[in-house]
Image (cartoon, rainbow, N blue to C red; front, side, top):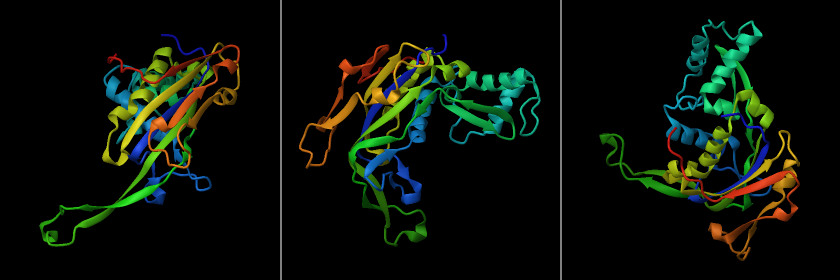
Length: 296
């Protein structure tokens, strides 16, 4: 399938109930928060991790859909594969001398690893495969309203060693957000998709991953996290027909219940899209669910 030839911008809404969507290790793993406004934050890399995990879960073993940045992955070993595949011997920390060989090494990595093709990667390790700027870029997600970053005490009834059997039980802490609706804004560049050969099929799989990634990322610490809505703006042209911020301004999430009472469910909000103000040359599609596709 051909690479993406249209520019896309998108807005994605997800929420959390009694969970920690993205703990900050520098703050005792408390939910990330803007200290000036109290608005909750989820980093771009947090959601990319979940997308990677979904792709690995659903496309494991499928040619072209391996994941480069993965738990316990040895990146030099993966870079070495590119050199072996095209019959070159790597020189420590250097790219091949010939420009065409540099392009072949980097393109092999793009062709074989979905996350490099989609998000880009810095592969300038000891075995150098260059750098790739990916077509998909994400902003930080921000909660619609200020969140309450809470914590509670928990105890562990079991002990690790027999000698500790009579000691007091271990105390711990659990950090969580009672409820938060988060908004993510993102971009898909057609010129960069051409460079990495990121295809329409890849993009369809990315939309699917956004709408299903929390279903396979359950844990007690994350509470109930749900993908609520994905709004995709498609430009007729390669470079775009309107500025992204003007499209994002058409999407609003607002309270429909008493704003004095803290929100505790998605039904406390409504998401609206002013399609009448949609610029010429831009179409929009809204998704509240995308069914998982069969493995390729």
